[in-house]
Length: 86
Ligand SMILES: [Zn+2]
Image (cartoon, rainbow, N blue to C red; front, side, top):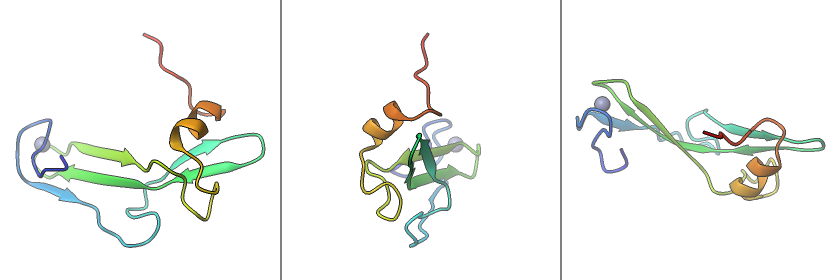
């Protein structure tokens, strides 16, 4: 998606959300814990032909929430994200 080609249908009718606020596109990922909630910004790509939406989550928590903690650490320690076992 990042290169402008949809991974689902092959179309090049792909748009990227480019809002300049810290949350970029208003879609955030939250890692809930006992004491603190870390919030991660995202980068989103949307195909207008098949409506596939790809969301990439930032590596580090946004500066104003969660003090720059890493995504891996925060998600693994959270109470709301569970590893999928298959
Ligand atoms: Zn598509």
